[in-house]
Image 1 (cartoon, helix red, strand yellow):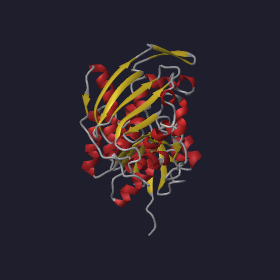
Image 2 (cartoon, rainbow, N blue to C red):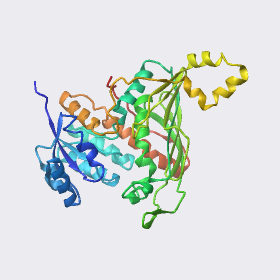
Image 3 (tube, rainbow, N blue to C red):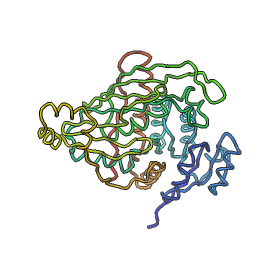
Image 4 (cartoon, rainbow, N blue to C red):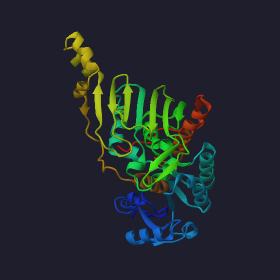
Length: 377
């Protein structure tokens, strides 16, 4: 039987839309782009011409019977109202991260979708990449025993050194939590499971940022240090900052009773899957003189005991679209989407909790939960 191909209507034709347009309908052939819209008409027309689709208004897109899924690639503040509009128009929704700016908005989106029998899902879908699916398989097979801890870190000096339009990242809806933390939190929830409780401190290190030919007032916190407690009992630390010039902190590591996994970067997907098996490590260390063991334990030289793990499925590198394609397949098959409503809402609440904790200086107990998405391997 011929595979059903679902139509996509794209809202938001900015810098990032090409990452989806290059894969959906090209690599992932169970979907096709129908039309696109943007607040700037000329921008939509340019994208439409480049990718051979129709440019239209958002109203026309939402009314188009050929559009099954609305793909929202706008700034975070518009995710909630556009998602509600699309759902009320009878469309499934896949949105860039985050789902919404607060818990109430996320709950409303999910409830509306459920009441209408529609799907909602969110980026990031990078946890579906071969590197993270390999990490998932190692964890599921017990390669590192029970997970007891994690660390996740994105620490740098901000986007103004490279981004063509960096002002947004210092406005409401920007900042390192809503911009970068979704990659790390989604990856961790997919590997470890849901978060139960969080604590966090945040600060605004600079009231203004020099950006190209002007100065930008900073409206959001830009430096966060947090702690997460997962449902399985594991605890982890997370550091997200636009204020620090350089750090040696690892991107993402998972610690178990029987070993350690170094994961790729959940944003760029760069890096290998590295595995340290505790028993082998212990055997090798005990071959050394006693005080050499101490030196090796805390030396970069100990990295030689990690093994590079072959990927269980290929990794195409830093691309986007797999989550949309999986949602389309889930709609046709009547199953849950892997980057679907439950995990999207849970991650969205966790992102909101960082700021809630920073404001209250008190722990935050998560209201939502989810299960780990089904693996692809």
